[in-house]
Image 1 (spheres, rainbow, N blue to C red):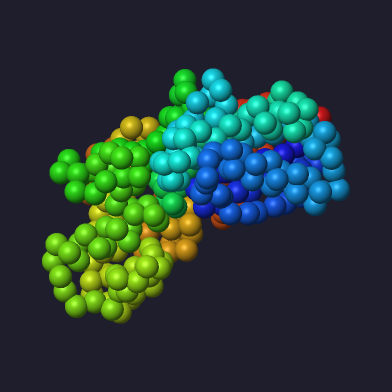
Image 2: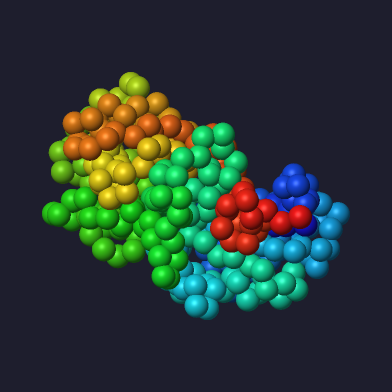
Length: 322
């Protein structure tokens, strides 16, 4: 049997599959926010154990595990180090070693979550060109990129952190990583409410948005945009930054197709993807790619992790084990 794990800033997913890749065990739970990274490690192990129970399997039955994780990663020690979208008290999240001990196997493959996303798209989708990208717009922003048939991971596993591209040289918004002007600082699910508050403070206007509500969220901005002029303005500004970020991705890697996932995009597809498609021709000097929603919803990353487990960490269908 094989397993895939998706460690996100908000949720943890674990799946167990049989030898043909059919998922027979599943678990989803919230990602702990402390007190330390060990609490997150324990939650990942619990999710994997529970998925095994759901599959009526023992962890020792698992031949290989693919892990898709938020970053930044330290592949040398198999851990997440100082994650940008979790509290500062969580400085290190050990993953590879504890999971190897749980399943009694050294075949544990750690990837940035967006790299797992592009592995999932290439492995499972009908259309899987050699030049493509998977972009997530969620709690954070990132991309997995495949160029000439090779998924780019980087020496430390952190290639594709496009959410930390500097889009605004004035740096009016600070990213969760502590740097200013990053794409993620404006358009991620965590930071959209902060950006809306900044825009309103800069130019106070009447709005129905619950800006002073402690539960004010990105979902409110998109929900109110149909009937609130200020909310519509915020969504328009997000569209500008998103299109600029995607144009940078296109110029750097020349993908033929970009699949987009993540909660912000999945729950607000028309308001997020349509403006990107409309603006790209005016921003891109080369070939404009096909931009479409992922075909696998919020399963794409965990299914990419599973594909990694089944192919020795590569996602290459020709290397599936039998």
